[in-house]
Length: 477
Ligand SMILES: O=C([O-])CC(=O)C(=O)O
Ligand SMILES: [Mg+2]
Image (cartoon, rainbow, N blue to C red; front, side, top):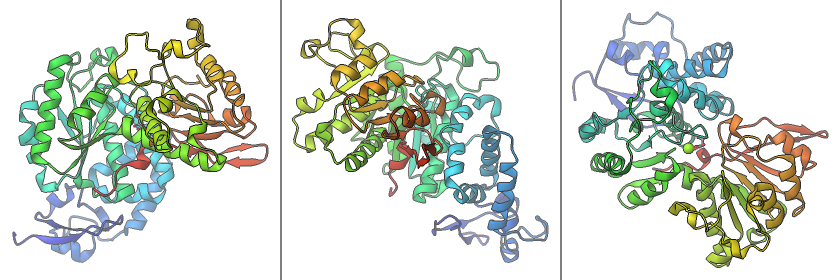
């Protein structure tokens, strides 16, 4: 231990671990994890070689938060607020987290869904500093050495994306890493996992987003996406390096597109401590919402008929969780699957189509549905009507598709429909809660993917529950 090393209690947001600081003076200032700015006390300034490097007055963390709140609120838009909080994070992680914690409901919607969606879209033009790792074909060979440089931070959670299925806005190229940073901030907020144990990672295998490929400012690897064996090889190189360096860290796969999400989840299920947030996280949180609704309705899951509009990672992940829960209630797998309809952009998913494997489990045999006569019958509204749907779930990224007609059709089968427009960010939601309460006379039980304000309907206030995978992030890694 060098003579300069000191113990540094870093417990401003509930984290009571001690860390050692081996540097002093401007190195402290430049290390966002330990820099406290004007909150360093006089004895700390002396010990850390910061004497005369700050103005004389000491500002408490509480006062710093108060000042920062005034500045954030003075900004004109949420994206400006995002930029402010992220630049604070770049120089003083403690203060950024204390600020977020001071009003988590409000700031979560800025560092996370929905504002983070804009940050992904404008990543290159907004770029200030890297907050995570960017692997691409030009450096993936060095992944293991790069990761070893982070061993002194004892990485416990990495959120890893290949940027192809970001929220409901698709391929965002290098910009997808912004969602990884936002998710990890919430690991710190929700579970107290220190920010230096968190690592956001982009697997930049190119992009098929034409606008990005044509944008001079684009900072990602300017190539079309790797596909087939080249893609698999790239992901494998990363996964091997990660396992070798951080064998017990959690690897959260995030926003992979449906073509790859299931295969990657399954390939590394036993090799890495890993899960896919969109498949398993969204599935778990949606099921939790449905089970809560069952308590309110005093009904059983087995009494419901489920329709999931959007047969991607989230949609099929939800179907898998519902199936498991139905089987726990005593149904057979076939009986459980018979109660779940999945729809994609072509309508009801049926076995007579050429389907990717992940869609096959819930595809319906047209012969099993007497009401299915022609392609018009595959439409959402018709399936709700003829299929007896009581639970309507949206992971489609198609705003407004849960129309009044669709909701009226659900009301034919149940007094209290469960309606979950889960697509993110806000402008992708399948329906707006205020409309849903109005159309159902306040009887709908609603969960949304992005946060929505409370709704007043006929003199009564309704609190809109957010049903987002952030609420089931594993906390105790
Ligand atoms: O990030 C969110 O808000 C939820 C999520 O995983 C997604 O929409 O892909
Ligand atoms: Mg996601």
